[in-house]
Image 1 (cartoon, rainbow, N blue to C red):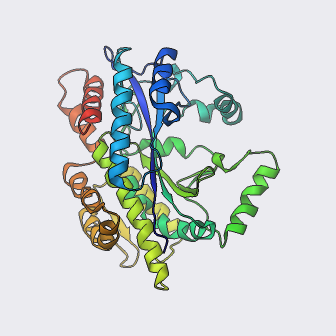
Image 2: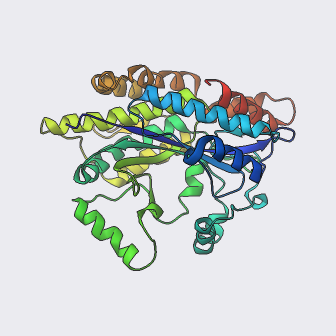
Length: 368
């Protein structure tokens, strides 16, 4: 088994005005200040009210915590100078997508031309986790096994119950928006890296996409790095919850490779079944449990997490991230961000949408 499991985390934030708590476009001066401070670790996103950060290649979750905490603090510092604040929520509680402006950049202009109204609704933010895998064939071999755990990660990360002022009834409405894009959802199963390249090159050779960065599956081999990139998660308001999800991701990859070294593997389930758990995570977050395909029953999420912690304990200890993996218990106990947002909304005497945004600003700063 490979000796290193490097990790990288990307987060997308929304920028809100500190007076109205509505979405606000990032001024050029803000982006320039962030760039001067953080270099290539910060970039504009599809809409002007969004900003993206990415950690360096980290050797451990502890290293990722230090880097991501720094990124969050510096973005908040520069935003405050313009009477703005970042929030790490997958959808804004009340602002409307029709009122947002696109970032002036060839890539985003081309996406708008290609995807039309589908692109214009993309007022959503996610969190991506890269885990280093040295061998391309291993990346492809791990994808259908790792896919089993994607609904678990989505459920824990759910932070988008509201859309344009309405309670959608879903824990992750972001997934509903994103699934309107082409080349999204659970990844197909490929028998080899050669088969993956042959399939994706069909679109590249036809001029539909220039490279695989425009394939937006929930899990994909990164186009830019020798990593497996998990993309299913909503961005989460609390830094510690982001790190818990990243630690689970890293530990699951190590566990699957450890099984392979013993001539074992995690059972590969049909995408139809995993899609059902994906929907349950999207709809309910951690509140209604997921299907245990082996037993054929719905298992409460708290029980699933205890099983997962036990399964990953050896690997989490080896990666020095057992505390972060165990932190999922807090998410289950206190509820997802979606549940916490709904509680704040219900308790607000007036302007409940603004109350939710205030809450999200507080949570963004809570672990820094």
